[in-house]
Image 1 (cartoon, rainbow, N blue to C red):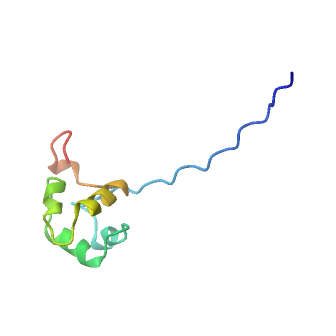
Image 2: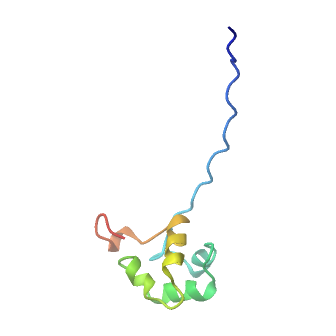
Image 3: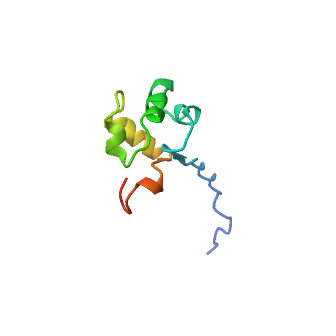
Length: 87
């Protein structure tokens, strides 16, 4: 009985997410997140600081779907304003 001793193919490394803090990021950084344009990015910057996602959800043009997309793209809310386990 022969065993195949070839190594399994290497997987490409997972793309690294750039973590963006909505309480500190520039308009340009926020606008470059998929699903966010300049108008929403400017509204986010103008209404800072945020304590959690509910604060951002209250902005015009920000839907629950956009929040999901933001979170899946490495967007966070600064830890200095969040309670442990929240956000």
